[in-house]
Image 1 (cartoon, rainbow, N blue to C red):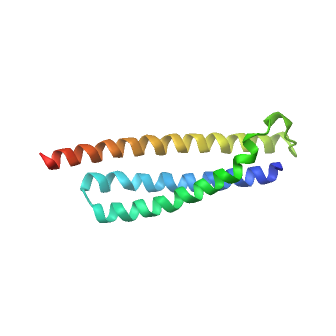
Image 2 (cartoon, helix red, strand yellow):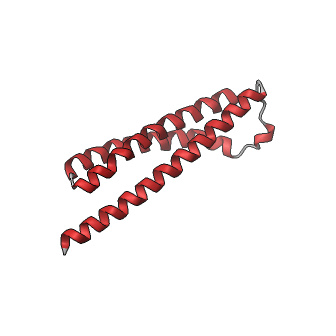
Image 3 (tube, one colour):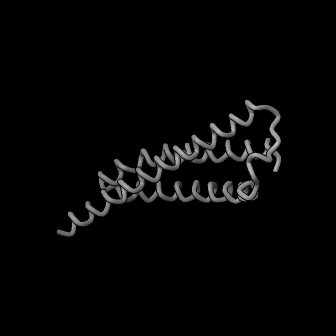
Length: 116
């Protein structure tokens, strides 16, 4: 895969992860407030974004088998840009996973409290 295509896919991945990150910020108040109707709507939107992310990841799969050192970049700046975007994607994904985990724990606690 050429490096321009790789950077484009990384940008797409970052964009989807940024949208997911914004969405999970809205999730906690809905969990805490017990607004299941709005939460289900948010989860439906989240599912669409996760499908988009899965498609981007599938497009990136061929790159995973390549040795990054063998890639030919137009410039060192382009290579650094790709690294920066990839690092931002990793950061966003970690944040999303942490928030989701916390929201899941809060939802379980809320359900346990309700059933008592």
